[in-house]
Image (cartoon, rainbow, N blue to C red; front, side, top):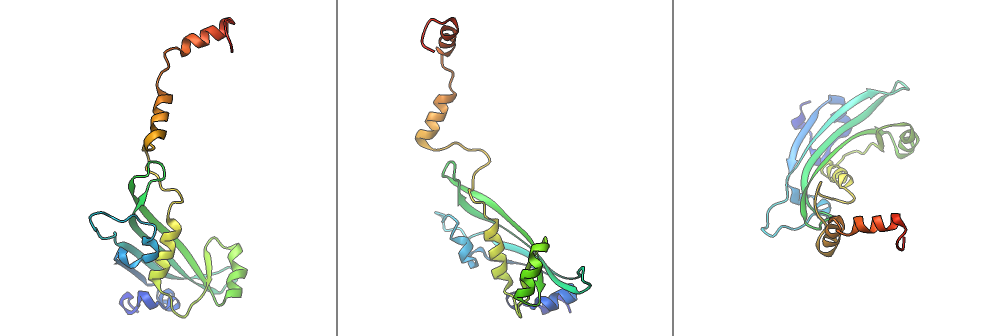
Length: 184
């Protein structure tokens, strides 16, 4: 079965894994309403960046000798966020990569999950890959977005600058304290 036989919005994960198929695509950023809630609006009305993704189905033999259905998912986009240090807009690269394993039911998934490095879910009859991609990108959001290097705004920035400036009488005060001629 070729990858064009699969519908990413109604994905049969078991069939994808059985075929060892790979899907890839790009969806408009505006289609990810939950993710866009965290984004800053643009003054120029520019479109949100597209979300590029790949999904690869796989069938692995587990330690118990039974096949396990898996999905390797990667997604990336850029989101305009507010820097929590300087409060200015910043462009944040979001990259999500997750490996999911599927179990026959919720009880089996709960039993296997603590022993696995991968996330284990109950196998759905169909999976909306776009919703899963959005979930993973939301999880990839930084809790406190910050530029690599920036200055805090306004009075705080001024106070930090003043603190870093050399103090002309600091050496004299230190000399005075060391000679015992004044308050320590």
